[in-house]
Length: 621
Ligand code: GLU
Image (cartoon, rainbow, N blue to C red; front, side, top):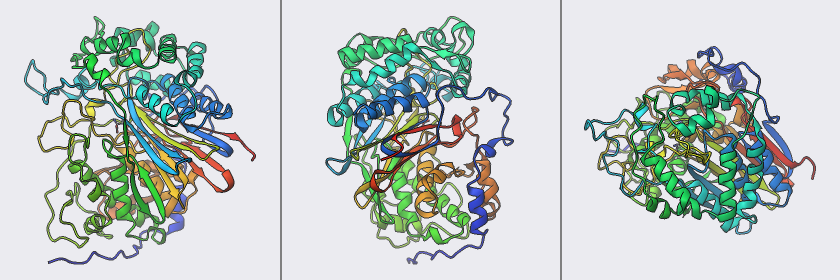
C-alpha cells in the first residue's frame, strides 16, 4: 500500500525575525569560545587588503586571496575574458594558497559561455595510475589496511595524475583569448618578487609541520631554517616561478611527457624523505604513461530547475551537481519562504541527508560505473525521496538510499537498509569566481585534496603533489561506485555552480571543504533564493553541514540560533571551527551575483579561514 506524502505544516518553533537576526550574526562571533584558540596566531592579517564584498561593473573576481584576486582583475582590465582571468587567478592561488591547490592537483571548471548562451564544464580531476591495484590501500608488508593517517595521506600511493595544468590549457584553448604563458606571467613575477605571508599561510604550514619536514624538498621550501614563514615576511618561490616559466615557454609537454613528468613520477615512486622522519610514506604506482594518457573531460553539466531558476553543476566524477540538485528538487516541494527559518533548516537537514545517502550508494566516476544521474535529478524520484521527511521529527541517521529504478513519485512502503558511508574527505581546496564584461562567467574549484596534499613537493619545482586518491573509499567493496579502479577518478564533492534566471547568468558560487562543499553551496542557495537574504548575507550567514550522519557539524552561531529548535526535533549538533585553526570548519566560499544593466556583486567570506578577497573592474558604469 502506498500513502501520499505528508503535507508540510508550519512548525511553531521560533519567530522568523528572531532567527533571521541570529542567522545574520557574523560568524567570527561564532567559533570563538567553542574551540581551543590557543594555537591561533595572534598577529593581524597581512598582505594586500582584503575586501569581502565589491560592487560595480565591467568584470569581477572573488577568491580567497587578495593577490590572486588582484591578478585576475588585472587580466580583466587588460582585455582578457573571464576564462583568461580565472586561469591567471588560479595560477596565483597555486603560489599564494599552495597548500590548497596548484599544478600538482585537479579540479572542476564550470563556464557560462555568453556567445553560445550555455553552461559548459571541464572535469580536470586527478586519475588513478593504471597500475594501481584494488588493494592499493593495504600494506603489502602486513596485509592490513594502511592507517588513513599518517600512512595514506602522506604517501605516493594517494597521488593521482594532476589535472590542473591540462584544465588551464583546455579552458584557454576552447574559450580563452590569452596564451597559457600570458596568464602565468603575473604569477611568475609575484613568485620572484614575493608576497606577504598571512596568518592562514603560516598556520596551514604549521599544521603540516611533521609531514612537510618528512621531505627534503618540502622542508627546504616551507621550513627553511626550521620554522614556517612568519606572518608579514615576504615569501618567494623561485622554483615555482621557473616551473611556470617552463610551461609558459614550452607548453604542457614537459609536465605530461617530458623531464618534469619523470620528476613527478620519481617523487611518487621514491618519495624524497628526510633521514630523520619517522613517517612511513608508502611509495605510489604512478608511471610516465599515466601522465601522458591524462585527459581533461568535457562534461555536460547537471541541471535542475529550482523555483524558476536553472541551477547548473558538475556531473560525475563529482557528486556535487547531483547531490545539490537532488536536495533542491526535494526542497522545492516545500514552501520554505513561508516557514520559520528553523523549520526551513530542518527540511534542509533532511533533504540533504537523503541526497547524501544516494550520493554514497550511487555516485562514482561515470566512466567506470553506471551512475543513475537521470534518476537522481528526476523530480519524481525527489517526490519519492521526500516521503522520508517528517516536518515534525528528524529521521534517524544515516537514512537509506532510495530506489533509482521503478520509482513513480508515490511514497513507497518499504525502504532499503541504511548504510554508513565513510567520509575521509578533508576540508581544504580553494574556489574562485570570475565574471567579465561580455557576460561570461567562470566558477572554478581546484584542490590538492587535504591541506598540504601529499606533503611531497616535487624537488626543485616549487609545487606540492595532491593526495586526491584518498577520496576513493578506503575499503574495497566490489559494488561500491567509489571503489579503487585503475585509471579512475575518485569521487569528488566539488560543486562549482552557475544559476541562470531567464536564461542569463544570475549567480555563480562554489566552495572548498571536502564533503561539506555540497551543503555550503546548497545552504547558500536556500539562503539567497528562499530566505530572502542578499548574496552577501547568504555568504556570511552561519552554516551547518548535514551529511546524513548522526551528528551534524554546525557553526556556533547556527547552534545558538536553531540549536534548541532542531534538538527538539531530534537533531544532534556539534560545533565547527572557523577555519583559523585546524578544527573542521565549513567552507571558504566565493560568489558573484549578476544584477541588472551589468551590475555585479562579488562576495567572499568576511571571516572564515581568514576572509576572502573580491574586486570589480570599475565602480561605475
Ligand atoms: N577532495 C575533495 C573533493 O574532491 C576536495 C578537498 C577539499 O575540499 O578539502 O571533494
